[in-house]
Each structure stands twice: as C-alpha cells, then as structure tokens.
Image (cartoon, rainbow, N blue to C red; front, side, top):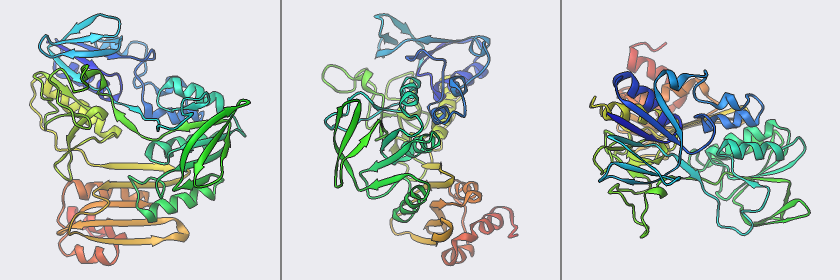
Length: 421
C-alpha cells in the first residue's frame, strides 16, 4: 500500500506517524512545498519573540526521525490530482501515484484588496520566510502596524510586543477577537492591551498603503493616517484548495469542495481513496452537526490521526470538531468553546469583574452547557471543554449556574465525579 500525504504540517506528520504505527509495511510519502523540515506555524510567534530559534519550530527533532520511520519527506508542490489515475501532479512537471491519498494542504493568508497591500514592508506572518522578514523589520523602537486582531493577529501581537516595537493594532470589526469574544470580552482585551502600551483601533478599516522614503503610510477610515516602518497583515486565512480547480474554476478531480474540501465522519472526500484533514477540510462540527472548517491545531492533529486510521483500514469515526480557542494576550488568557454565541432558544449566564479583567459567560441548551467564554480564568479551561464535549446534564446545578456561573468547577465535580468540593 502506498500512502501519499500532501502537506507537511502537523496534520500530515501525525497522519504519517499513525500510518507507520498501524501499517508497518506500507510506503509513506509526505509532500511539502517549503524548503525547511516540517514545522509548526503556531511556533512562529515564539521565534519572533526570540524564545526559540528556527529549529525550535520544527515538528520533530533529531537528525533521522523520518528516516527511522521510513517516511519519505519530499520537497514538491502538488499542482493537481487525477483521481481516475490515482496520481498527483507536481510543480516540476512530474507526478506521483498513490493507493490512498490524504490532502492536508492547510490554509493560506488572505490580504485585503486595498491599494498598496503588496508594498515592500507589508508582510504576512505565516511561513518561516515571512518570519525572517518580520524579524528584520520589527526592531526595538520600530513603528509596526498589525492589521487584524483575530486569533492569529493576537498571537502575533504578543510576539511583536515582546520585541519592544511601537505597536498599533487596526481591526475593522467593532472589537478584538470578533470570532472568539463577544463585545464585553473583546473590549476588556483591548483595554488590557492599551494599558500595556499597545494602541488599539477597532472599527477601523485600512483603505490604502503608500510607501515613500522607506516609510509606510496607512490611510484609515475613520481616523488619521498611521505612519509605520513595518506592516504585518493578519486578516484571515483560506483553505488551500486552489490546486484542485480546473480551468473553469470549478473543483476538479471529482473532489467536492465548499468552503474547504468536504469530508464525512471518516474524513473521506467524495473521491474514492482520497481523504482530507486539517485546515483544508470542511468536516463535521461537534456542536451543530454541520460541515465546517475549523482552522485550529487540535482539530488538525485529531483529523490527521483519524484520517490515517481510516486510510489503513481501521474504520474509525470522527465525533466532530469542537470550536475551541485558547489565547494568551500579553498575560491575559481568554478562551471560547462551542456555541459561545448562544443556541437558539437557549439561556445565558454571565459574571463580569472589570477591575480584575475577569469574565465568564455560559450558554445553555436544555440542562446542558453548549458554549462558553472565559477571560482571566485559566482554571476553567479544561472544565468548560469537558462539560461541553461530554454533554453532561446539569440537573439541579442548572439553577445554581444561572445565578452564579463561577460555580462551574463545583458543578463539574459533582456532575461527573459525585463530589462538590
């Protein structure tokens, strides 16, 4: 059996290791289109903050990890898939055949369509090559503008602040972390950042970027222009499905796509013997049952493991991915889980402590917690995730949590272990 994996990120690496463990006689090939060994994009902020060197971003250490596993890692860009011939076209004009194929191509950053977005000094922060350019431009005292205050943007924010730059964050939504936090939580995070020397401008759109004399000027609406030495763009990502598209622009190769590559509960695509996993896959959502793209590393890793098991014939269903984000922004930990925005017809309970930057919001459906937000409450992270994923019935604790959501730890202990300490 020959397994080919397109993508050398966490999904692809975990899939290859899982395949080798349960299918020791197979041939396994990972295709990656970057020159470095397989690495984690989530480790790039640690590189920017000088906490690790480039090798610290590598997913596996040791000179012969993949050789020892007899996994071939090949630098090659996939440019198409012929599912009839079971072949992957490569950028050098060659091709590689497969018996089972896993598409784990991840996502790519999106730059907004504004004039000057491709100017010198406007960078993404997605690859190691991007990181090298950001490192060169983000010197202590440099004026840096970060476009985007979503999850990725706030991870980059932490790293840039650690470099001692003069940092301005511009977010066109009305709050920071608009897909992870409500208005209360987003506003608290913005105040926290500003108290630590970061300028935050929400509800602001960059309308143009001009470069002159080695400096950048960003026109904004509303507000005055912003001068910068470096602009880092973190305005979202999109699944890497473009290599599947034919000349007509429709998804080719018999692989059905929506927002990402559509997969079932075994991570199978619409094409026989082709699987997809990670940020490129649009798979089952734990909370809603709908097919969603969850571009988070825990989902990517679990996708890789489950896809590999099914590729090797060990039929294993995927329960669905839980929308989950945990983030540290300049020392303030925030988290969101499941239907944090609320379930239709459900109920809500909140507790806010502005002076201590603490916030907890629980979302209920019947007598279960189906979503939650937490800010400044690190001890609650595992509890909230556990209550949501296990769909624990709260019983008498429902009324108690309506009155005081901070008792959620007590509820968890009694409902799952019969102990209300």
